[in-house]
Image 1 (cartoon, rainbow, N blue to C red):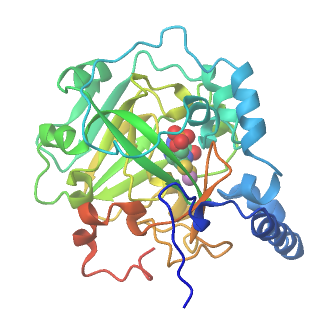
Image 2: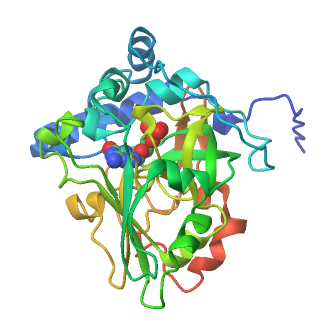
Image 3: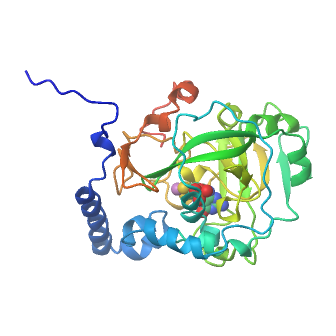
Length: 337
Ligand SMILES: Nc1nc2c(c(=O)[nH]1)N[C@H]1C(S)=C(S)[C@@H](COP(=O)(O)O)O[C@H]1N2
Ligand SMILES: [Mo]
């Protein structure tokens, strides 16, 4: 019998980047896309960089360093540490702020950092509408004042099969929602990003049906993991990451984590969210991270770890099953993507 012993220091096989497999998968995507005329259409979809650029990571970070990623008025935040994610290894700041998806600031991974200065976040307000006792327009500062800030280190898994670990600073979404006192008709919470093509020039192209819209079931929104982030690494969140306030739902694919929020609506009917609307067979409403459900054009079993040459196995609910699985006990996760 062959007995294999592994030391804790050994790198897991699943974490080693298999360049051959990775590039051939991309080549396949390119060829398949070219053959069906999908290449042109693919600029409308999320995976443009995955399908079309040769090394999205290196150039993104090189560009980020020469662009104004650090705002002149980037305040340090006061926050308390928590137990969330203390065992995870956070992705370096340059990658978190230099490798982004924020299509309103461009569809390339380094575009949001380069175009960050277009967006002005002062003043900022959030309009709250719908099935709630407290509605109206609220200054961002007034909202912020009601919450004490905490740090949570969460995994972020993009539907494009890459991942990061981000030390967010913010407050629980449940605390924000409680203030507005939603009524029993509030089955979903919808969020909208600012619509202003001058401040978000990517909105001059109809890549998506702007404004970017996302939503959660009310129980998902009230889950203890759901978080509103206003900072990263203890500093005010930069525009490319969704300043001044963005959603973080770590068990779902990245696109649910809507940035630069100006509107929150409590609604009875299932809202039509942006990516779901644009390609429903590829991006569902739930968008729960699930290695057993492949994207129609690539596998979701593994993910590239941004800032390293490693890959890891994707985990169901991005590793947060304990906190969230019970919300989906009656749901067929293969059908409800
Ligand atoms: N308004 C808006 N929010 C958005 C996006 C976007 O294009 N516009 N991209 C989403 C996607 S696909 C991902 S993976 C995350 C990326 O967040 P990060 O750039 O802070 O890592 O933001 C999400 N939120
Ligand atoms: Mo994403």
